[in-house]
Length: 237
Image (cartoon, rainbow, N blue to C red; front, top):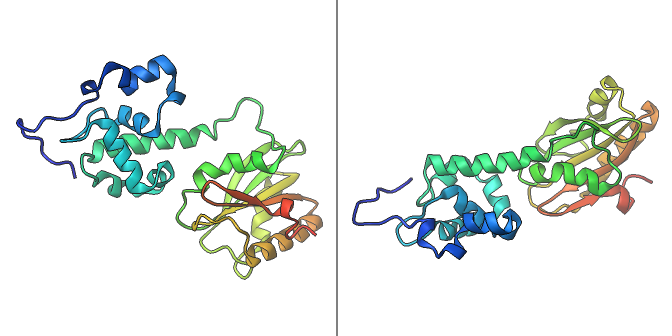
């Protein structure tokens, strides 16, 4: 929790830094892309704590949680309990991360088209890489491979004995989708497909042929990495 700040213990502010080193001034002059992650966090935090300016607090948070992905995954209370944080600052950080997540789903007037496995991975990786359990989602596509919707089908262990293939196609049939892309995450961070992943893929591909719905790919999402089973020829024989 945030510790009291008696009058004889000054708070270290961004204004204590030389003007050329202040994150806000650097952002205004150079643009946000020029700032480090710690500097961007410092702008949200505004002030530091005894012995640390806001940039140093940002650096400490990144180290404590293993970078931005760790902050994304971290429970709200864990961030709030860090020295110098509290509810307000933790809320600011979580809100900023959530805005970034929602930005990836902001669609232009023209529906987003999927032209490669990388396009599909870019659409889901930001959020799914931070999930602490396995989630299986299906991208529904029209005849021009434009995204109609992303639906969650399973939460928990994704294996061939538990996945009911019909469930993966239920929303695709309702939406009159022409194709689907299956995607799920590995909370371990390693996107290497398991034998169960391959077995599920094979069953889904076969069902798609019967339903006349193309199964374009099955992506496994890890930490900063993803794998296309289609590109590896796994389950698409």
